[in-house]
Image (cartoon, rainbow, N blue to C red; front, side, top):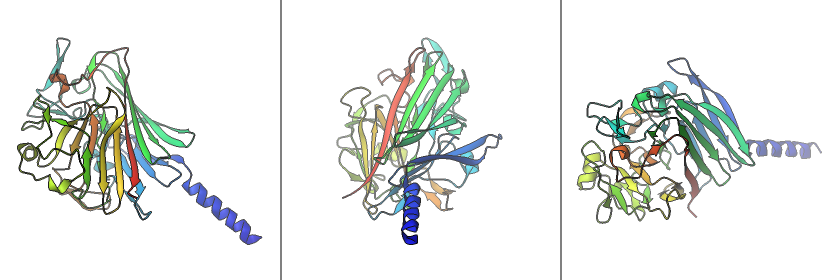
Length: 370
């Protein structure tokens, strides 16, 4: 009888440990004295996701491999201080993800100058963009889906952008081992907007991503100039090393003899996704890692996807375990509108006006090879 009671108790503990849940805990305090929280999402299959209120930073996505072992498949830094020192590392991006050239843009006949570097490039919304702000978090549970809604209000004129912008990013973990991010935003003045997430993935959990097989469902891409800003052209990938329409080992392409690869020292390019309809949630990329057997499928309503292969990592930055992060330690898969769209009228519009609500969805689905 005692054995049976003990067995029932043990089973209850095991079930509770694996049941879908969302928890919030203190994570640290910013240099400005703001209290930062970490939200930990768990589904019934043992997949966990950890996201900070600071910048919506993903510090952990733990998923199984083919042998039922688990590993964190996003790059993480040691602590909050390290994230504060490294802008946009595995964080939300805004107001405008990626690059805007020319020091700003003109909207409805009015010029808006943005916080830019010496070359006139504004990157990821400028200094203290959305990835360096402390958002307000609200946890939720919908049946067995769990998650957190992060909310932020960006003031009119912040980094040069017009309009008071109310924005939310909802992180949902489902029972299909899918992390979904739903973005919403509204403004009180006409503005431009491009929201994304800069998570660095490594499905092996360690080492380089150059053995990953990458497939991006795009027949075209936007070529870049020396500042890694689109030239305005939209070219075919066919016949170039940027053709990833079939699964391709990254290491075979990152040092290819091609002008576009040389400009970025690897991949740092926006792909024009093959979309059956505007705003349709469709598969954009499929990544496989032969060693672990892990698979990542990225679906999005956005028209573009930026593949970045951590070309600037040089070992000076260290991960949460103190290991140096070298070139190719991770890859970013940024679902987005195209870079520099406010200055490129032939690109899909990023205009948001009062009375309209911006919405977009990106899903990251994890599985293992049979």
